[in-house]
Every structure is written in structure tokens, then in C-alpha cells.
Length: 459
Ligand SMILES: *Cc1c(COP(=O)(O)O)cnc(C)c1O
Image 1 (cartoon, rainbow, N blue to C red):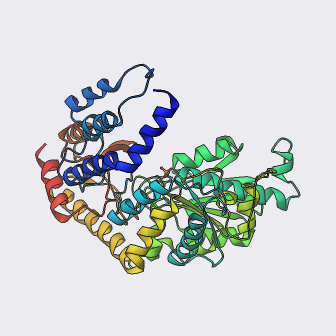
Image 2 (tube, rainbow, N blue to C red):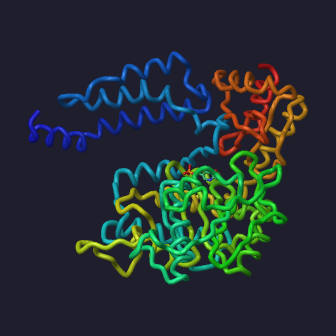
Image 3 (cartoon, rainbow, N blue to C red):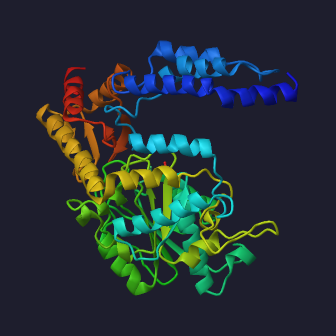
């Protein structure tokens, strides 16, 4: 096919919509199966992935064939996290309206770098920024950057913190870099998420330059053992430990930090949503005293991937850290998204975030968080009744459990993962192998939990 033929072929695809109808049909088929299909692909399914292996194609392929391959080989090799029995990592499902909005936004194919590239994306980012600050009870005027997930959001928050703390010592990181810079102190909980350590490494700080704050058995920073905090300190706290879901004593930590003039970043990837829930708000008490926050919409909120947010009280600190200049860039009076993120070109993830927030509203988000927590409690209570040990204080959506006999835990986890009926991940909890359960999907019902409990008891 020469380009003229390709061009007319593609235009025909747009005119007839046949491809899109096919895609829609496959998508509907998947939606219908997602609740009942194996949560993790079977061995036979996984073997089919080899069918996709081929050298880089030399010439064009029929688009129908591409979609057929994706559906027949791809769909069965997905992890059914949009169903109700996936409890791995902290993986949310997706609300239907967000998916539908995302489909539309995919057709728009917007680049959200600048207002002049996408006024609608800029408007929705603006709205989401305000709504999120209100939902979490953060100071009005808090700035938000819309990124792929918490890993990137943490990098942004810590970059703003690092630059601001050094600026206060008369050092401009943007101009001078880090070589020869004055010291800043970093204090971080011993059980900080791995993405915090990655961010510290990317930002030129490194593990050895961070003082680790001792934690209790739940992974919460211990106030009685808190390393020295001074005006040059970046203190990183956690709203939601990735294993047990525990929250650091954020209010106490923020009070200590604010007396010293330190910067506090809150990693609230899934736990910050507690602040949007009446019954759980006590867990995040004091977060408004922090300086920056990172949170995922693709976890607790059940927005589709990828949807993370960095929030920063000092707008200028964030935009200074993310600044970039080029003769062809046209900044506007309205919001230019790239001033808040490391990326220039980005997809319009604010579309599905906005759709989810607008669909649920404050009361719906409150209900969603309550539901996830109630399902978690049901799971934990059932486990204890069946003789399992629940290691963590179940305060949010996370459970760490193990068999009464430690040798059984690894074997049970393997059987659960191979069952296709439910999927949980493993972890190490205070030195012992354990199974971690994260209830993060709006789809999870009491029936799902009870089925999983039977599975745990009978495998
Ligand atoms: C998931 C998670 C992260 C990383 O978030 P991504 O969206 O996967 O990049 C960071 N911190 C905590 C506590 C998490 O649970």
C-alpha cells in the first residue's frame, strides 16, 4: 500500500465506523464477562500470548485482524480488576461513566500541555483542582498537577519541596543544579512506599541522605522516636500504608514540622480519600497543615488508569519546579497544564477524573469509601472466624493476614493465585510472610467476599 492508499483506507475506517463498532462489540463482551471470568489468566491462556510474537511487520495489517487478536488473545490475558474479586496491590476498578467519558476523550485525542492546545482539558483540570482541594479539606488555592500516578505525583511534590527548601537557603536548583548545594534534611518513615525512595533517588537525594523515622508494628511513624526536624527538613508522611493501610499521626507530625518550618509531603495514594469520608476523616486529621500531597484517582476513587494527582499549597513552588521555556511555547492567562507536571504532552486524564467526581459527588464518594471499608471489615472478620490471623489493625481498605501455621501461608497464597476465583498478593509483615488483601473495587459485594472466604477456608 502506498500512502495514498493508506490515507484513503484510514478515511474509510472513519467514515464507515465498522472498526469502531467491532471494538465496541468486543468491549461490551469484555464488560459482560469481567465479573465472572477468571480473575487471573489460566496457564492455557497465558500460553496463547506466544501467538502474538512475530518480527516487526514489514507491511500493513488488516485493522479487523488487529482488533480480533486483541480481543481473542488479549482479553483473556487481562487481570479482571474491574470485577469484584481482585484484591492485589491497591488496584481500583473503573466507574462506567468514567470509562465512557474516557472513550470520548480518546476520540478527542487532546494534548493537555497548554490552554491553546486544549481549552476543554484546561477547564476540567481547573475544576478538578478546586474540587479536590475542597473534598480533601485543603487550603483553597492549592495547586494540582495531573500525572500518571502517585509515583510521578510524589516526584513532583518532593521536587517542589526540595527546590523551595534550597531556595530558602539562597540556592536556586533550576539555575545551579544540586552540585555544591547546601544540605537539606529528609525524614521519612521506615515503611515509606518504594516510590518515595525512587523519587528521592531521581531527585538526587538518595537513601543515605534520608533519616528514617522508626515506626510501630502497624508501620506508623513513632512520635517518640522522630528524628530531629528543622527548617531545612522535608518530612514525608503516609496516609495509608501499602500493606496494612495504617495512617501516620499526621496532625502531630504536621504540628512538629510547622513549628520548625519544615515542609511536609503526604503520600496519600489511596488513603487521602479518607479525608472525603465522614466516618474515616479522623484518619487524615491535620493533612491541611501539610505543604504537598500525592494521591491516585485510579485507586480508591475508581477512576480508570492512569490518573494521579500532585497537590501543592504553594502554587509557585510547584510551577517553579516544573517550569520550562521555549520560544514556541504560548502560555496563556488560563491554565497551562504543563506548568504543573514533568511532561509536556499528556493525555486529558482530567476528563475521566472530572466525570467520576461529578457522577459521585461528595455523598457518592463518601458512600464509596464507606463501602470499601465495610467490605474490608467483613473480609477480616470472616478470616478471623475461619482461624486465620489478621495482623493489622483494619482501619481502611487493607488486610494483612496469614495462616495460624506460618508454613501454610505461602502455599495458600499460591493456591489462591492459581484458582482464578480471586487474586491477592503476598508481602512480608514484621518479618513473616503474609497475604495482603486490598478492597478497592466498587464492584466488590458481600457475596464476593463470602465466596472468597469460602475459598480461603477450603483451599
Ligand atoms: C500505589 C502507591 C504508590 C504508587 O502509586 P502509582 O499510582 O502506582 O504510581 C505510592 N504510595 C502508596 C502508598 C501507594 O499505595
